Amino acid sequence: MKTYFTIIKRTQSIMMVLSVLILIGLPELIVYVPESTTQYTTAIYFVAHISLFLVMIVRPLADILRGVKWIRPLVILRKGFGVFSASLIVSFMLSKIIVDPTGFFTAFGTPAYWSVTHMALLAHCADISAVLLLITSNQLSKKILGVFWKRIQKLSYVYFFASGLYVTIILNDMMLPWFMSTVIVLTTTAFIMNRNRVQGI
Image (cartoon, rainbow, N blue to C red; front, side, top):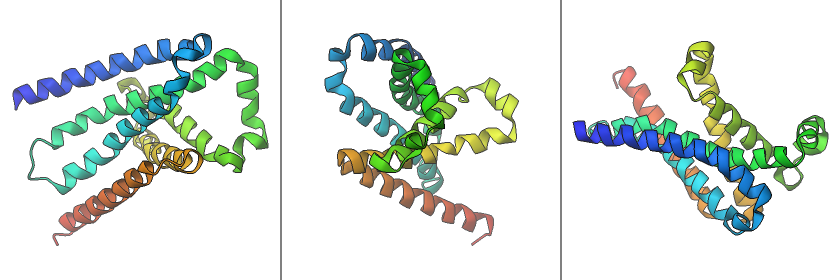
């Protein structure tokens, strides 16, 4: 078990370092070498969603399968995979800022930015949630925000479902509904089981 925890911690460190490298390099590639990323955009979004899916299911699985000891330690990796997922999405936002910073931030105050046309509202809710999750995924933010930190971390549900619905509707990706359905079922089941345990049922 000690070796298992060591592997988890090292994996966590690798994911965090990789996320930083992505934030440093991917926006520049998107802007200055677009041919290197354009054909992989769909794949990048898919990897981001897979990572977030793992984040969303590991805690309810740990609550449901309490007898399976190797699952609970995986909850530690939620931070690493969550930051990794958000770093991919935020990189696209950073590329837009590099190209037109004034236009990017000015757009926030326009009705078109929050329009339901082409599911812009879903996309931007997911983007903003990803940014907030990314910048608060550290011990300093946890100390400063106190009880509000956990509330902000619940934006992971907004990030997951808003981005999932956007990709499903706009890109017609039929795998995302399965991801979302699985998360709903597991989260609901874990909630009921935890409530029953507290009530001694």
